[in-house]
View 1 (cartoon, rainbow, N blue to C red):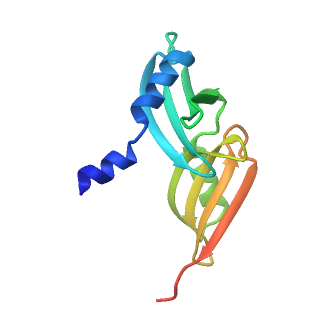
View 2 (cartoon, rainbow, N blue to C red; view 1 turned 120 degrees about the vertical axis):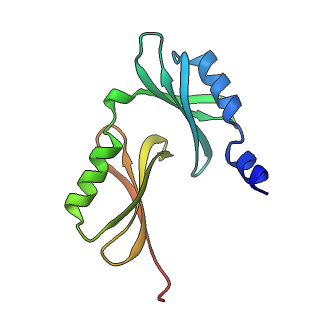
Length: 141
């Protein structure tokens, strides 16, 4: 069962890596992840020949590189986590991952807010500007 679950989780990773190596300046892939929003997106991180760190956002359904960003232009996940903790002392951080929302690279922040709601918040990777936020009440125990 674990092998099947892991296989589904990493489906398309090798295709995304191959597409990035042939269609972008990335020469050395360090990480491939996936994000399931309106459409499944693969996110490939790596370096160019001159050691520049890039992130490429891939739509495998269309076999297309949607965009490639220099990671130095992105707000760091650590900075976003610190801002969340500074602005919401009652929040409990869960995770931050790259995403793709509203046709734009985004950070997805996951946390429990001060009202005990499970929150998915999307912000632009370059400036932290809010894109959208979903807050879900949790069942009372």
